[in-house]
Amino acid sequence: MTSAAHQDASPAAGLRALVVEDDAPMADLVASYLDRDGYEVQVTHDGIRAVEVARELDPDVVVLDLGLPGQDGLEVCRQLRTFSDAYVVMLTARSDEVDTLVGLSVGADDYMTKPFSPRELVARLRAMLRRPRPLGARAHPQPQLRSFGALSIDPLGRDVWLDGEPVPLTRTEFDLLGALSARPQLAFTRRQLIDEVWGSGWVGDEHLVDVHVLHLRRKLGDDAAASRYIRTVRGVGYRMGTGA
Ligand code: CA
Image (cartoon, rainbow, N blue to C red; front, side):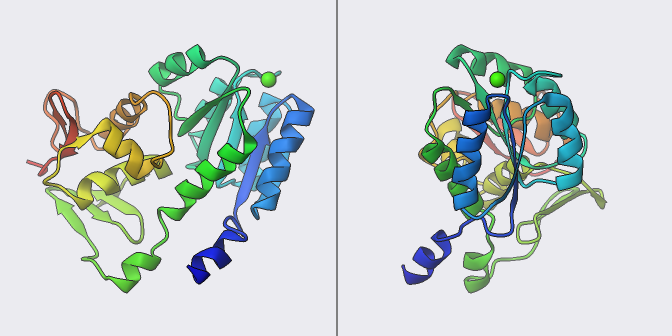
């Protein structure tokens, strides 16, 4: 408990965050919460500039408003995904927009509808940041590599190879594959995967999982009809495939 309390004092120390929001007071509010959590924060108010700043900053986390001058958050996210695996939280003005966005599979990792609590935003980010830390794994060493046919997963290094070639995954895609491959016998429900990857406090459309599975399958050369790596379990959700 003591070490956890110590870490929580500055959970995001050394990480970079980019806030893209044209509502300046809102941007400053979000930035101040992130700053308090230890992030190095940059703020930008328009969509074109956002992509330029992201290229320079190489952020770990991006808080991205949907409605922006210049180009909207969708386009920013699309461009960002061509060079960044930052954790993207998209801010929307209406809750029904989230369904549309999830359907468009733009590559955001999470969504929050305005008005939202900046406290909840940083809490979600903290929960996300806690996941990949290899501290627990070091205390209880696990086999380094998980192999499924031509697919190899290194859970500690967070690397994935297919036929010996590295597969670039976003943080969320890796976490999803990591959860499935850690317990390959288990058929996960969408809710279980949400709990594993986004945290049990996450509230929203569980079909967000399907969007990330779609991306993962594409990157793994898999398809829904004959999936080798991520199997659909009818009426349940997903489980790891053997690669055959
Ligand atoms: Ca806006």
